[in-house]
Length: 438
Image (cartoon, rainbow, N blue to C red; front, side):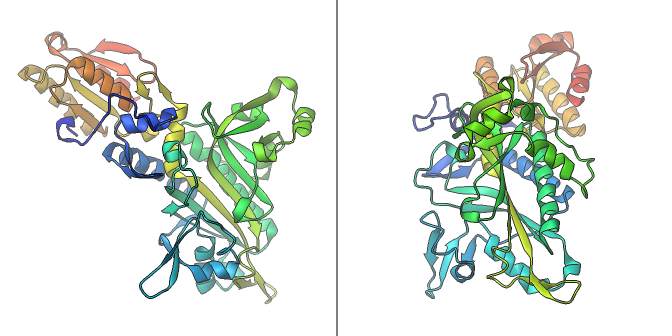
């Protein structure tokens, strides 16, 4: 992709409305543009990152056995009346009346709709266990939207819903999502700590939030330091028996501010391991039994021939919020430092003298070779001064910077910089390609 033909509206100055670093950098790097309070347009560079985050979330859901579908953003109010949540949910729900006076709502979550889909088709325990997920835009009319995509009103969310014959089976489904979340966040370059949490308007008696530690986190969190250092389970776990894996993490103290018990924390955690920090919630999982299936009559026939309501859980990941969390965890004074897995491009090729035919030819050769090797390349072929080009490359955070100028062309070398470390090397293009490919 040639930068001269790309749409990348970067800003030199930090917008006054941006209070935290992720919001500042997302605006300055041309990732998003605010259209209304808590509502953002996703510009080309930001959309590329969002799609990569979404794909990693999708892959880990499918690895854990969830099946993807897509539900609409608008839902019938009558479905929510069946569950009893329509009046109870509160002013965060955007209620709508169409031209035929039907009452609708812009979905803040999908427990009712997915239960309606399930009950229309599944009648026997033989179809269980089942976990359905989608990645869809949600709307919650926050009283005070702030911090950019960290607390917006419209946001992209992965929400999954499990259906099981009984509580024991449902807890196995819960464990699968627990482990899938640990693996997901690790792939995104984040260390996420599971913490016992309040169930809120979703309901139920078992819930965990997944918290990324960051100085600009929204709330105080308390945990055993060993949880932060614990390696993730990885994809090769025994997906049918995860209780020991979950127990290992839930046995150690970890709680959000709302659930914190100071006496327990001090009693259960050695002083050297007590960690108090700020945290960002990036995922939330719930087991709530028959809270929705009983009132909505989502039942299956058991092996004994008796109908019974299914046991359910729901599992959310803030896909768009994750972009903000990644930036909060990975940046420096120059700008964003994207983890390789979600970077909008793998390499930026910087042409230091566009008017020099030999330099431009060398850049074209490098771009072609990188693309042939399967790399996503942004080619800075603009007539901006070198200092401006380097500043833009640092700001947008692409993992590798490959710079070609007249002196390098004469000597048969390029300069390769690793954005995360700042390390620079001068070497032949072939060796630079090998380094990038590792």
